[in-house]
Length: 391
Image 1 (cartoon, rainbow, N blue to C red):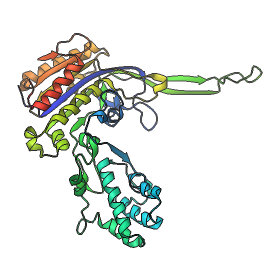
Image 2: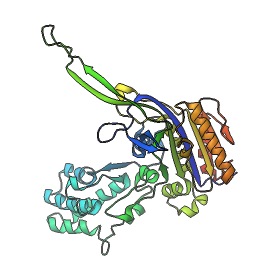
Image 3: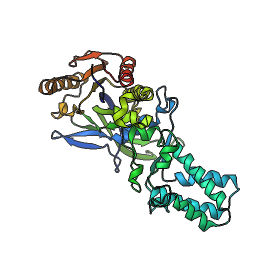
């Protein structure tokens, strides 16, 4: 039995002939590791697909959670536009309020769309801003300058409510939405609005050297006549890769409970952990079953994890990526064996203090890990969070 301050989730996913995550040139993302080039999937890509997945375990299917929206146009389209649509407030008044809010939310360059960074705002924050905009507009119905000054004052750190979004946090539970509570938020214009991520996601990479090829393709014109020039209407190529990927996710349980419940992270064991447990249950399923990927129509890059190992423990997490510093064979049994041998070395060096459970498609022998199906594994992880004890 141990206190699960951290849950470490290790996975192996296999994908053939896919282009899971592209760089700015349209090629698969790569990295060097252990003197070998590997295919890579960025953490941003992984989190995005888990966040927007629409299935039985979608995070927004959890009762009692608030959504969030990431955009450069939240003020314009979610805060001010509903007031414009009502057609009851002078346009100059709304323009002044909108400009002041854009600067307050996005910083000094927020007056132009290109000057704004996409910012994650929870729906409670959006509704709070909408209410403030409506109130300011009603208070100054005929004076655009006064309305703009009042809107700017809302974000003034000396005389207004403050630029630290404190009022947002006091107004509702999960002010940054569930996405903010899980994956954090950084606001360059206001460090006080930052939310520490409770879910830490590493970039996934192939356990073996990269495997890629250029796929040449042509497009046939269905209306081409026999007397016209023979040949394809279009010729192109794209990169395809295949790989067995190691993934690593850490759940900071005190941080997660704190972000969801509003308590101090040091008091997480005495807080209500029901929602945190439900989040972990859903997240476990999403990590195992939701695939990232571009070129969906031409590659169908859908796969479930061949292996998922979850460790619950009280000490600082550590990745098992070094099991693959020496490239492994591109086979699940070889990758599982490399992981198990490296984990055994870690246990002998530092002591095996984590409680482990594993889901595996094939038979495996992971040190000190009881084998479960995915449903039972997700339930076990959720119960460890709810109870504050992993058995």
